[in-house]
Image 1: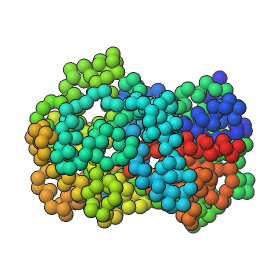
Image 2: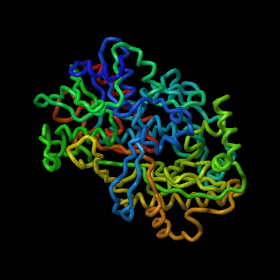
Image 3: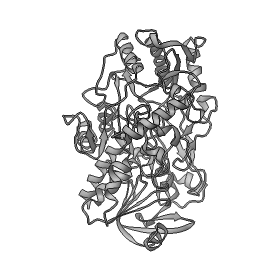
Image 4: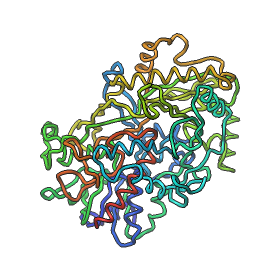
Length: 541
């Protein structure tokens, strides 16, 4: 039976659980909710299977980040504080979601992030509450301890390929009084060091490969790809079914227990609004009948926005050098095919730091992602010279945006209004971050590798000039969160059990529920949310 025939049979079928979205959290939920062998689970994914070669080779993010076959390729509306610039948002549209196309960096954020969630009224989400779920998910190469787990589905490994530029970067940070940190996910985040990556034996460890693939043989789990959810159907205030489109036909699946939205920070709020859950005024603008007035849907949008400083390197040791040479490309490709190692096996950032650059900050307010390559953003490609870069961003941005409907059609991308760089504190941190990067570049041993600063260049000297450069040339790291925020206030969308306020039978479990953005990359935290949500759902069964 092919997938279309299977889908036709499923039309009108009842499952215990329906999960919308096979991303970082959705794959976790599908695996955990089906592991009892009894609960029937349907997982719907708008994208296709993760069969692309470039998904599984770590450096393949350079290809998938702009590939429409596996990527939604969202774009924001013009940003007022960025001189009206639109910013590209790559988001995964494939099994594994964005964990199949991201930069592979494993980062949880600070313990303070989760303490703040608890302080906002989200009981059960303190650092001590979420740490067991991080540990449960993890298969840590360095072994288990208080902070790390061994034997979990998600492989977390050390870099096998260490570029001398990274050691120079870490030593240069030390020259500026920033301590070395060999575990950003351990006792403290502050310091400079090497990142760990979601890589297993030289291949990407996505949520699909870590969780879903081992579960797909279960008879009680049904996975349907290229199934675009159109809306949630309600009987009164209870969510009962999902209407989705497959090969042009509109189909319906019914949930006996619960529907869980795990479609991400763009699609989860859009689907809620299309289903009549959101601000009634906005729904009425598009002729949508309201099921429940929930004004926080689509609000509270946050992301990591920053900029990069790039240098020309005096030694041919960067990824730029590999990509400029056909011979070196072939050599690197052959090495990966034979040994799963070499320059093609590393994540987007190999080293980095977390530091406090504002005197009033009690914990790190800035992140560096040190990259042994340099180029433009996404579609611009690498520069045609030996070079490396440092991407910097405030880790807890104060700027807030929103997502609004463009139309009542699920096919139409919603309006993405992130309001980047609108907060003065965000701008101060970014400016101070670039100045710190320059001080490090003047420190040995990093200075020994540098011919000159390429961007923004020495003509960008004053604070005002640096801020202008970041305004006109910055970009995001695609860590969008918060649009279905968890909480108990009037603008919260879900409660601490991730149940949507005001309706029954419906939860949201993905990065959109974060009330505030974690201090760092978001994939690990989203997987943790999936793990914790699965426990909550099973307890309620």
